[in-house]
Image 1 (cartoon, rainbow, N blue to C red):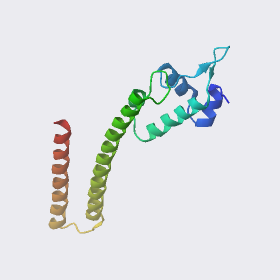
Image 2 (image 1 turned 45 degrees about the vertical axis):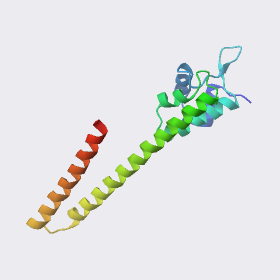
Image 3 (image 1 turned 180 degrees about the vertical axis):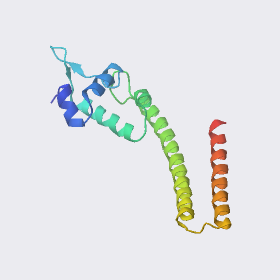
Image 4 (image 1 turned 45 degrees about the horizontal axis):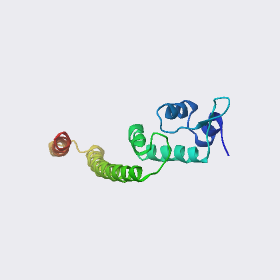
Length: 148
């Protein structure tokens, strides 16, 4: 089975412009028919689906391209090892983001508690200031670690 750009675009939800860009960049290289139009086969469909999944997981197109052979065919042993290395790195990045988002959610919950309390006393204001300062210090420490 094979599909035109329009058909594969409808099937996958990826714009025709994106599909052409992937071809231009060597990420997916569909065969050309006698009329020079792109024809996507099952393997190309798998690669497009892989790109969609990897993009959803936070991979950049450069990262996706780095784990796929220039021909767009996948996998050989070298490609498999690049996939393993990049996937491990991406898992570590996502774990760090999850931890960061949990911290942010905690900060927002604490902030919400302060905001919802109608107590405008000096003590409540000081609590809010300490909350901001504590989280600022934590963020500053995290930023230093990333810039090291």
